[in-house]
Image (tube, rainbow, N blue to C red):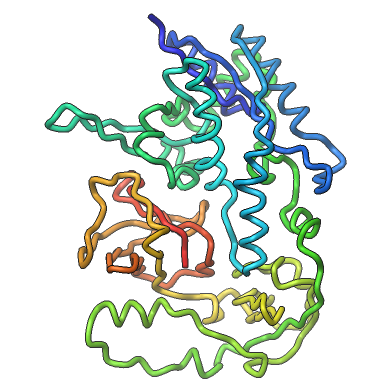
Amino acid sequence: MRKKVVVGLSGGVDSSVAAYLLKEQGYDVIGLFMKNWHDDSVTISEECPWLEDSNDALIVAEKLGIPFQTVDLSKEYKERIVDYMFKEYEMGRTPNPDVLCNREIKFDVFMKIALQLGADFVATGHYCRKGTIINKDGKETFQLLAGKDCNKDQSYFLCQLSQEQLAKTLFPIGELQKPEVRKIAADNKLITADKKDSQGLCFIGKVRLPDFLQQKLKPKKGVIIEVPSDVSQYNKSIPSFDSKQEELAFYSEKPIYHVEDGRIVGEHQGAHYFTKGQRKGLAVGGTKEPLFVIDTDVDENVIYTGQGKMHPGLYRKTLFVNETEIHWVRPDLALRVDEKMEVLARIRYRQTLEKATIYKIESGLYVDFENKQSAITEGQFVAWYQEDELLGSGVIG
């Protein structure tokens, strides 16, 4: 009997080609479109992208001759993603909605619906691959591997997936380059062949994050402080350490700024709209080099900035992940207390992998990079790899 696969058809080229390839491979394919937003109290844009996207998904399904339906997950999306995002931004942290969306919506709520429809697998148009290791006892361990297209690898966005979720997932385009995907779509006259990749919030559509946040987080005037690069806290003497843990704790501490550390150079409409490393939206001129956000204080409503992308306030070597925020895609490789592991790690999607060592302690896990990293941001995810396999991840504390 043919295996049944539910494909998350988003109305884009990647999921369209994923559905086509599965059909070619002999699977019984069903297309499902997720509607994730219709809260009129938060206006997203004058356009209605989800309608256009669902229409494109329907046309692709008809072209491929597969059944198609739309599922409304907007209630779950609001509860699990949007409310969480607003709460995090209010606290001065920067969440990653795409990682959360995959963990909470696509591979949880959506997957459960697919399995209720009798699916053996769920498939998506992500640029990543799944590996399978057969253990001595005959049981399988699944690997989350980077996509073959280095420019499009999306394994980072799936860094919170579990073994149970991977067991039921297929990534049909993981071995392909993006131009190959577009060619397959064009050769098969799929309407999405030349469609641009979406740049908006995960599954919400064409929306700029600041516009979205301003609908719910009220503007509140505050000052922008420019902190010079020779402030005393950057020149702190390095103590001698009694243990590796002491050293890691020292390097993972983020500087705490005060208004008197610099000078007022402008005003902003709310510290909660800004994130570390941000350059745009400050609207402060007259500096030799552009200003970058080096920290935000949402309690005092102050933004701290520094001149130039080499400002020492942007860089840190070590970060910490709280015990409750550690996730192993490969639980069989999870570190025990006092163990360490050489890895490659990244703290954002587009970043190249950087050499690091992870150290497990009672209260969590340190990620100690070989080179200082720019804009380590609380609330974002750090993911660690060995070669092209993503082993685990955690929320930066």
